[in-house]
Image (tube, rainbow, N blue to C red):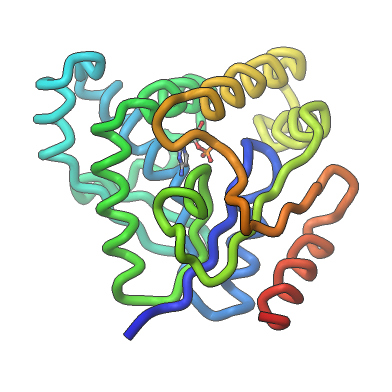
Amino acid sequence: MTHRIITIDGPAGAGKTTISNLVAKQLGCVYVDTGALYRGVAYEIGQQGVNWKDDNCLGSFLASLDLNFHMENGHFVLISSGKDITPHIRTPEISMLASATSARPQVRAALLTIQRNIAQSQDAVFEGRDMGTVVFPDADFKFFLFADLAVRAKRRHEEMSEGKTDIQKVEQDMKTRDANDSQRKEAPLKAAPDAVKIDSSHLTIPDVVKIILKNIQKG
Ligand code: DC
């Protein structure tokens, strides 16, 4: 039996996480935040002091990686070797390290297997950068969500420590990450040719959810 797969890709701050979670809730299926998986890898690399630029070191680290997830009160909870690491993966440092380490083909290959295994057993909404292009090229519905850099930085700034961080720094980090993620050789951030592209710069979250659900119902 094949399962219904919906992909939502796009850059940081476009609203993917909230929107994907809401779409999955409406459809009654599982939601997978693949950025959290990349963040989990980066967190463990940092904790274990892995020399991730070395193929052998990275390979043995990935062989021992044990990532799982579940939903708790509507939130994605990331478990690494039985430990909840969710509170540690959203820092600016982990964002940058996840962006850098996600460019390594070995990291992408390890997570590709995990992601496809999840899709074997259930309908799911997958959120990320390369869901519609590389991981699930045959997905049933594909969306690409984007927004102006200044709008995305403002949103992220508001989310982070109640706006106490410097907005210029948030915007600069986002710009660096956009460049890393879209210029890497392996599975760069880009819209699949058959994805529905949505500019969320001037749309509310419920507006975007509505557009996505309408497209799926039209199916
Ligand atoms: O979606 P996010 O900001 O939590 O993702 C963190 C980093 O992980 C992002 O900068 C690039 C990487 N990533 C990726 O390469 N492929 C994905 N499918 C999801 C995230």
